[in-house]
Length: 114
Image (cartoon, rainbow, N blue to C red; front, side):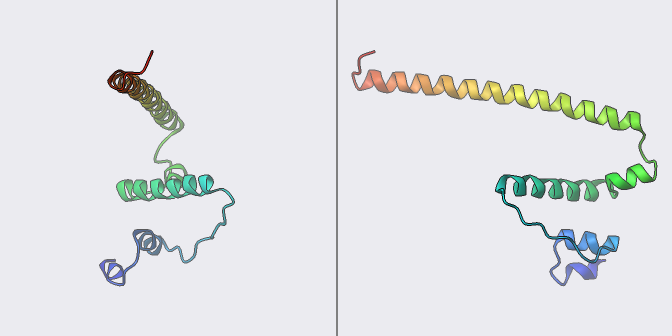
């Protein structure tokens, strides 16, 4: 498949060629937020395929992973998500505190009445 890279194909096109995919459906989006989410799903799928060499559909159809493993994966991902939410909250709190301190310093420097 090295010869495919020489004709300036994208990673997605190379993956499609390897998988025998000859065409893709195009979608129009009213909402750019939806388009961005779909783009992320496609990118995430590409990363997973490159990393594992199979799709989720392959895993399911070929019984590469059972229901318990899927449920475990979901649980672990959700646990990670909770940690990311907490970290983001703490970062937001720190930024808010820093902004208040900066405002206090600015007001104090400029002689503002509190």
